[in-house]
Image (cartoon, rainbow, N blue to C red):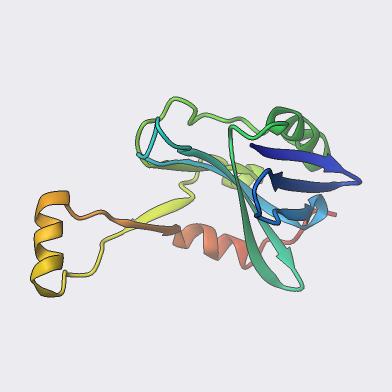
Length: 154
């Protein structure tokens, strides 16, 4: 089980496992996004991402949307960030992503597909023939450009 909560204007994420989790200050958040994968329903396929800027460097913290406490955290964040955080990808069964906050980037695609490199060797070519070419996903250029000029919330 994954747990998410806010205490003293800091978002905390922990799990029952050995993962140490993460903590981020709300004031360091520069972007919130949601994304889904095509891996469900047997495994988690819907996630929330917090992008923070700390000492000038960007950090990415993700949590499953099935985490305990997620709805309470979203409600608290709406108050602290000063805007609605509308989740719209709940029913998606394919790769999809969008920015949820800040307002000037809402609905902009967060992730973009990158074509995988050509297969090397017979084994890779056979695997691709039977499984197909699976694209890699990365943060969209438009988002990266916007984040180079976005400042943390006061």
